Structure formats: C-alpha cells, structure tokens
Amino acid sequence: MAVEATKVLRDLRKGMYHPVYFLQGTESFYIDKISNYIEESALEESQKGFNQVVSYGKDIDMSAVLGNAKRFPMMSDRQVVIIKEAQDLKDLNNEGGQKMLLNYLENPLESTVLVFCYKNKELDKRKKFVKELEKKTVFVHSKKLYDNQVPAWTSQYLNDYNSKITYKASAMLIEAVGTNLSKISNELDKILLNFKNQSLEITANHIEEYVGVSKDFNIFELQKALVYKDVLRANKITLHFSKNPKEYPLIPTLALLYGFFTKLLLVHHSKDRSEKGIAMLLKVNSFFVKDYREGIKNYPLVKVMEVIRLFREADGKSKGINAGGISEGDILKELVFKILH
Image 1 (cartoon, rainbow, N blue to C red):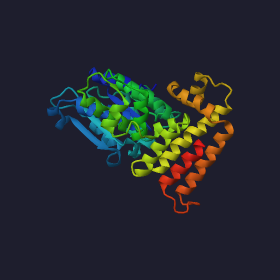
Image 2: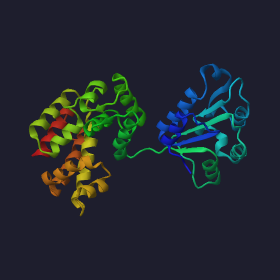
Image 3: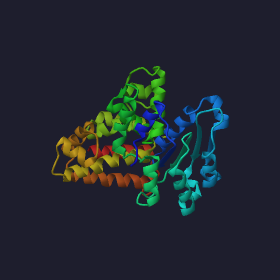
Image 4: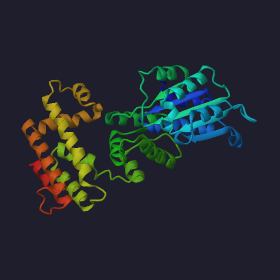
C-alpha cells in the first residue's frame, strides 16, 4: 500500500528512517520534498562526504545503485543513497534490473537509506514488480491534484505552520503562479518568512504585497464583476488589463473566463442547484458556489450560450481571424461590453 507523503515527512521529522523509499508520480512536489529532507537531514554535514551518494538515473545502472547501497557506513550509523530522475534508470524497466532490486529488498541493509525518485511518470500498479515495491518499501504515489483540490491543499500546507489563507487570497495566488505546488509553496514560504514564521492569516493584501498581484485588478475580480453585472467595475478592470498587456495577457484571461461560463452552462442543465449539488457537480469549494448561483440568475441559458460563442469569436480574433488589426486590449473591451449588454 502506498503511504501518504505527509505521513512520511512527519516520520522523517521525528527521526524515523527506513531502508528503502520509492517515490513516484506525476506531482514532483512531495518527491522533491521527501528526498531533499533526507539529503539534508539524515546525516550530519561532516558525515556526508563518505556516506552520501546522490546519482541520476541516466548516469547509473541498478548494479551500481545496489553496490552503493550494500556498503557499510564510515564513522556513522547510516549512509544515504539517492537516485534522482530514477525514471531514466533503464534497469528499472527490465526484468533483470527489477529482479536485482527485489532480491535486495528481501534483506536490505538497515544502515542504508536508499531513495528512488521516479518523477513525472507512474509505474503500472498491476505489475507484480510494483506490488512487491509497495509491500517492501516506503512507497509514495504522488499524483497531480485537480485544479479544484489546490485551494484545500494550500490551506492544509499552511495549517502545518499554524497559519491560514482567505479564499480570495488563495484564488489570487493560484491565478498568479498556477497550480504547481512547488511554486505555490515557495510563495507561501516567502510570505511566512517575512513574518518570521509566526501564525498568520494570509489575505489579499499579503498576496498583493509579496507576490505582486493587484487585489483590485485581477482575473478573479473581473470574473466577479461580470457575474454580478457590475458594469463600472468590469470596465475599470478591463481598461487596466488593456493598458498592461504583458502583465495581463489576453489568452489566459479568455481561457479562465471561458472556463467559468462553460461551468455555468453545466449548472443550467443540472437538476440539483443546491450549494452542495453545485459544489459536487463542478468540483469546486462551496465558497465559490454563490458566484455560480448568481451567474445563472444574471445569465439565462440562451445568454450563456451566446457568451460562449463570443469567447470563441474573441479567441479567433486573438489569432488574427477577422481581427482587422484590432489590439488585444480592444478585443477584451469589446468582449466584456457584449457580455454585459
């Protein structure tokens, strides 16, 4: 059975090390987090010269990996052997190399901490080899999160530091850096560091100051202005976007707003429009449900379908189709006007 990455980290922080770790999956955040912790903390700095070997999969084979793992530590209770980019270790994908590793796992050296970092790929869990790995190693399966899971992850990450974040701040942060967990954690760490890691509730003001995203002029606020048909606010934000095209490129803006209105289409076709029903349908946090409920009031089904057509038309113009030399800023201003009227 795969072990939760957060549990592995908690155990490591308590000084609990195991002979073999196999870290795999399409989300590299926890793979890096666990392997970096072991690399930095399993040995004293003075012990690392003789007792720590860090290799890359493309530069080594299974025979050499296990040769390193079978050595006894020098002037230390343990040694560390880390294979980064283990997905490039050819032997790991053939029967001979797999057999060698399974033989080692029958009786691993207790004084060795052997770590495989198999990144951006997943082994086939149906294979006998993988089932054996799950039984005989600390096996971590690190999957990419769905976009709707990232806000909850962000809150959980901060919870470990006795801190929290408002929903608006979370949305602004994700808009700014995307859903890459490493980038999100780096920005959160930067904010916490400015407050000497004290307990903190991160707000839109913190994101504006430390991440560089305007709390008043961002895609989150433009979407809200459109949802509530706040014409003045929408026009102010659109004008700001058009004056700063490098900071607010058109294509990502269209993509995010288009995503909202396509979800609004799903809500229109749904029988269950309760808060829970919409949250489950769209796989969004219940905090955002009120925007969708407001959206179906202000945008009847026919209008939503028209808006989706307008987005496709604007996307075509952004690619030079029937654009007539119009700027990206003017494409957005025209789109917002047509949505609101």
